[in-house]
Image (tube, rainbow, N blue to C red):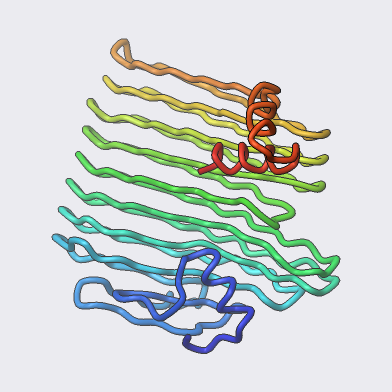
Length: 308
């Protein structure tokens, strides 16, 4: 596949579910260099003049098309910040698949900080999938600090799937969104940490238009001595509805901090937050163990179902 070795192809499969060159538009970045690019009739990808990232322009009316922009770091010691801007026209329906995988077998830290900014036109729908993955036997850390900024026009919909299940030593995920009248934001985050990993998720959502809505839900598992922080704030600045939820399983000596926050600046704003942190229920383990599973197998079965 394009200009990549077997390790790089494996990472691409992990973060983008790709085993071959995808249909539609794509941009593959490997070790800070372009590994392959293709635009389509309705989606144009161009490099920024200063070389700091790419611009993706999606023509008005584009339907049932996709953009894949995965990033791979397979060399130790790389540190980069990339800015990718998406300009989505009115009346579109598109899938955008991003994500970054780091395979670090060296002693130096490897870090990718990706800043994705979306301007979503009226009546458009964007499905955005961002997966993070780490592997490698080296002592160097695998660090990912994604920033996502979303500006939604009237009656647009953005659905985000944020996934980090394995191998990332440190991450701070920051998501900011501003919604106009009738706009809708849905976020589904799935996260697991282990060892001494740390992960922070920060969401700031501003519901600025009448009829706008946001639903931000995180499911996470903290194992070993890892630490997680979920910090979500929704500002209701109009007649709107907002919901934020953190549902977490804590294991071993893990630590989890949930900081839900709501601010209503309009009498017709309806905002709700929920947070639940606890260990795996003993009756769940016993039930699975009576079916022949070991305690460890039962735990894994419960966790896999919880994060699905």
